[in-house]
Length: 230
Image (cartoon, rainbow, N blue to C red):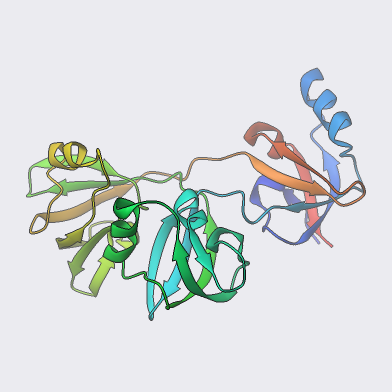
């Protein structure tokens, strides 16, 4: 099987290190020695060390930030951020105050509903949108903003390049009202996605199977470790 960079590998599966970049600097070599990572080591990328989680609730896909997902408690004595891909559970409670609860309600997420993890992904991209054919702003895909499009209602983070729509609902947490106002984000505003910024690389948290220890591997080093699926 062809080797690939650690940064390109799937999360949650065993990966055997097949080689290291021959031009590693002294610092990188020191970190690898400290982590106990060498050719033949078996690594597992932590699925939960991410910043964006795609979930399905009541037949609808929604995007949550990692910290938001940690605030949702389930009947499996786990937070939503602790569930595995394709795992389902019933929501039993939310941590935080009324403002946090308001954001979940805006996305159609509430106590008693079943929630299913669809994917853990980096949050790096940002939707650059034009509002009312005039103002151009960047918006995080995890924002609780719903838009009416030709394909039905979507969370803004699911809209594609050149897709248009009208904001139907949004929930601003305490202190966000001014930010949204400056960006003209409000119900009734016409929006168009101009482009989506490329996903930025983020550090990975890996478990070294031989030692059972977890280590954070920076984005630069993750490009210099080559692996294959076990």
